Amino acid sequence: MKILIVAYACAPGEGSEPSVGWNVAAIAARRHQVWVLLDGHNRAWVERDAEAARRLGAELVYLTLPWPFSRLFSIRWRGYLYYALWQAAAFLKARRLHRRIGFDLIHHVTYQNSWVPVLTGWVGPPLVWNGGRRDVVPLRLARWLGWRGALAEMARAAVMSLFRLVTDCVVVRRAAAILSLAPARCWPGIRRVEAVACGGLSEEEVMRLSRIRHRRSSPFRMASIGRLFALKGTAFALKAFARLRAEIPEAEYWIIGEGPERRRLEQLALRLGCADSVRFLGWKPRDQLFALLEEIDVLVHLSLRDAFGYVVVEAMAAGRPVVCLNLGGPAAIVGSEGGAVIPSANPERIVEQLAETLRIWARHADLRESIGRRARTVALERFRWSRQEKALDRIYQLAAGFGVSGEDSRPQRAVAEATGH
Image (cartoon, rainbow, N blue to C red; front, top):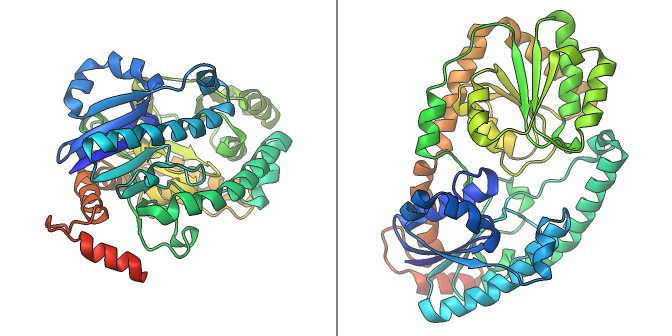
């Protein structure tokens, strides 16, 4: 098939959204002719790894908005405006490409966003859409984010509700398939939802992470990795760590990342009396993060909303148990095998259960190691790109109107759509 991958963010080895775009293009190009439409700001990253670009096997088509619109790209929330404008330009570019090439399928990959409308479903070919999740921070927890964090989440929820009315009409009902780990209740009346996580580890990453040994040396060390925003729930983890340290004085907590919450978290650690055991390591490049995973025992990832959670998969592949809330993508990744999923009933209960979980793990290295082995098995079986290739190709074949055997079933699909079945 001739497939157009629309990947606003797309670059090798950059983590998160850019890696999703790159790896989806790479596995699609193994079986099909692939063109990738990506934002021009990715060019520097791509050209920095010429060997990866050579191996990709797809044709890259860069699209950058002209000045003055391009200035919006790096200005905080205005980056969303740039993204929305880019989608309009991408529609026009994709339509011109389709007239020349004749695509069988379009796959919108990044951003994995459930509420910002994309227009590529109107180009002509069937659309596969990475729909992400439709999560918002529960109201019972929002007030614990501080007034700025709470206002930001309330504003986001309101904007999501408004834009979803448009997105449901413009994108959802035109998609031949939606890829999402969100529960079925998030997509009422939609039958074409595939529980596929477009996210995973390359074989090189698998080899490196699977070689990390289980850690048995002292002190017991927990870590949180990610941008320091209120919604990441690091304040809950700090309070639980303070309780843990009262019983296990040598325990340590490493906080890896930067963001507007850092100062507040540092002050909280001082108030809790555990600042001397909390290390703020700042932002680290992805390569260094893998090395840091060797030095920790567990990952604490209490994000109140996350569509996926690369760091969760990486920690599990390294054999490190993960504790998260029963919210968003991390809960779907960790499940019952990769660590502990804590109910998000209320902040006090979260802190209490987290502290108890950490207390047990800190005192029982054998249990920690056993959970870590299961976590590694889950990560390597479910979240590596080589395992997702077959599943994604099946979706492509069905969405484009071909049976899995390759037999053309487009007439049957047309009848099904006309009759609503």
